[in-house]
Image (cartoon, rainbow, N blue to C red; front, top):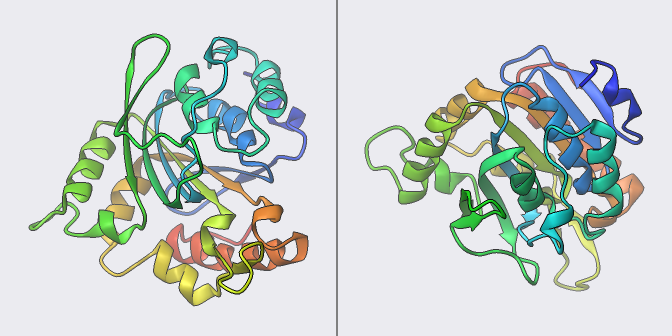
Length: 255
């Protein structure tokens, strides 16, 4: 892929980072646009381990796996597939990326499970290759004794996946930091910065993040304003997330 290919990805902003962890970042709205961004960001080290934070468990199998392009195909083909063939509900891009050979295994931090989401610990693609999936609701489940005494089973599995990975893509859906209102289930409540901090960097999560960021090659962020209370609310939420994610965790400048 040409170094300027990312300029063809409409609605995608590419950033260069100077902190710890990823040096490359992509920001977009619909989460399915992660598909071509992962292929581009991991071009030299695929398939990578996906570490993704989301409100929803986006593990619904693609409707037609035979139509999924290969990671080696032109970026235009990958981008067109993501926009026109992946589900507009943005929940089948992870398994599609496994089918394409972009993603090998996944650590999925998500609290809600949409109908049809895969709940197994393994996904077998069309070639018969097995992909391991570790799904937990919060990061503190992975940080519990990570790389130390008294490891939780989740922390032990996460450590194995990270150690065996060639590279990592860190993926964040902005709606991870929202909750549906008890008063009105159709209303989304964005979290304040302190709650974002408690979710993203809970106490004792340092060893987990050190291990993840050491191998993280690319960061992707999906804003999905319709899941975050609207355009204005999602901008405010992104501002609060950026203060924690970029400044505190990645130790780099605000985008």
